[in-house]
Image 1 (cartoon, rainbow, N blue to C red):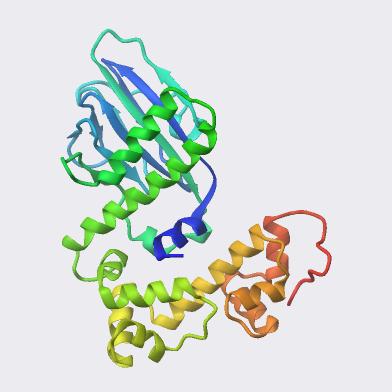
Image 2: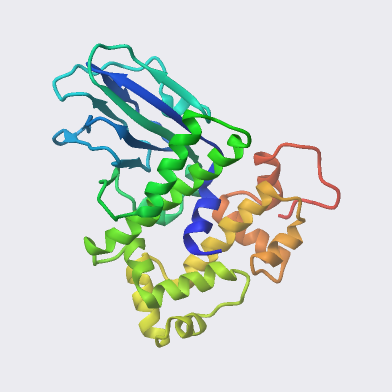
Length: 319
């Protein structure tokens, strides 16, 4: 898998949610903070105002996409002067796949496509930690065409669910998240040249090394070999990787192997020896020690804690 697909597979949990909301002016809605969630808003009709906790109100346009990767709260309204009310329920948190709601005010309509994803904070990847409190992707002709196509398809499916809509909407919500992150990664290096994941993935050398790690994390990578993937000397590669990513290459490799192992413990029936081999450990004992250092508990106990169930045959706890 490529880096971005891997990251989403590790941190996403549960089913995403979406709702089509129609507000009629005057309206003002607060969306409270939701730690462990990432929310989005897409403007389908109207020109509402975003009211951030700090800073000036921002007027939005049809096609604008807002993404709140850390679950920070905010408000939206038909006008900056409209009082904001606390919600009876937050559609981003309590919506299903096809929720819809409307308010019966006398004024012009605003239609929003909103929703959210559950992210496990214990599995947070540094790429997501690099994201700002809000990502605003304005609608611009010819920009982010895949994102616009996903929005159009998602809006149509939610407005008129048909056979197979459960699968279609779930897949489109995952696509929407990937397209939002891809759009941010495409634009962020233009504004930040000092470091971070957006710059690292845009860097041909470091991007090649990261893709090699994610393509085959079980390979016994050395800094010299990863430098070869990057087309750099060992020393030059190590310096650049550490500057952009914030940790040395083999430190990140170990962290990623254990994050992948944790996912396999949660989601597969593989034995500990099979998992240790799949993530690059030749010894189950070495894997168990490394896992305990990172997660504070042995892998067998971790599996029982996150997936309570009868003891699997042949799966014993490794200390």
